[in-house]
Image (tube, rainbow, N blue to C red; front, side):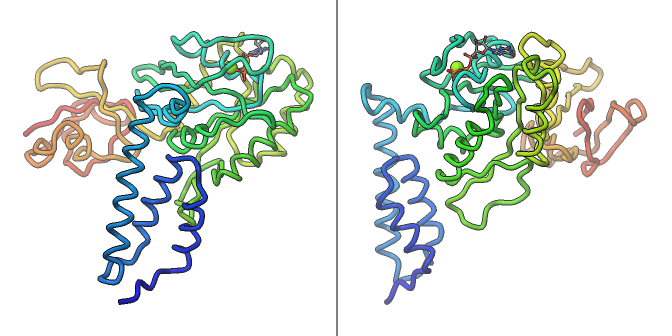
Length: 331
Ligand SMILES: Nc1nc2c(ncn2[C@@H]2O[C@H](COP(=O)(O)OP(=O)(O)OP(=O)(O)O)[C@@H](O)[C@H]2O)c(=O)[nH]1
Ligand SMILES: [Mg+2]
């Protein structure tokens, strides 16, 4: 029986064979299996691809456990902690590490010369009752692009592009970074509303940090950035401007499009330490499910406290919650 594979398959297979980066290769193999028509004619092909996937996984795991040349592979995936993973990228000396240093408990190396950061590192940024993970990265320039950067960016929730207002070459540096990522099939957008038609591509939300704001007194550099990046959220930041750091935290939290719902046991005080994290627009049932699947099934009603509600308002499971609501579940 003929396999009858779509042309898209052959194209991706060619790229799969040429790809050197094993994580990228694994991603492609999984995609090949996904788009492969599932019928008798492809049984062998399916089995073959499953073996390739399994071998690639083993190779990646092996690489993470051993030292030396293979260790670089370990950098292209960082386990997410907190409510979102934000990756800071930018040209050398743009201030990525300084931002992570100021906004988190981490102490990355900061220096007034380029190429200070050699490896990615993380720190946790507090915003009110939640923690958001920031990743500091080595710079991207025509002299350096660490291969693991593609994997890290693909895996992150949001990209923050740190733009150095002090650098004379700012515009060219940024153009280079965007072109480099496009070459890696990563497209940075003001908002991601849909998946790309071509599964080899990755769309990622990006926020701009017009950084070292005091070095751009007349605001000309920021005008240039707005021109270059229409529609993108742009923050003016400086590590010595606390207000700009607070705005950074709040903007990132809002960009994650999540909300915090606090639970309250019947007859007791609400727990403000450990909120349930849900996508904006979730309802009471989804909040209950987050606690426990059975809990949602047994739910009779809930009582709500929060903005725009009567205290202790009785609601049903389809009631849509908002950030900061307190919920008392009744089962
Ligand atoms: N004026 C000003 N300088 C800053 C600011 N943030 C960082 N810097 C300076 O910029 C220089 C580079 O800072 P880093 O944080 O090391 O920059 P980086 O982007 O991590 O650099 P690489 O690791 O080499 O890519 C240092 O001299 C910092 O003190 C800022 O808000 N304003
Ligand atoms: Mg650095």
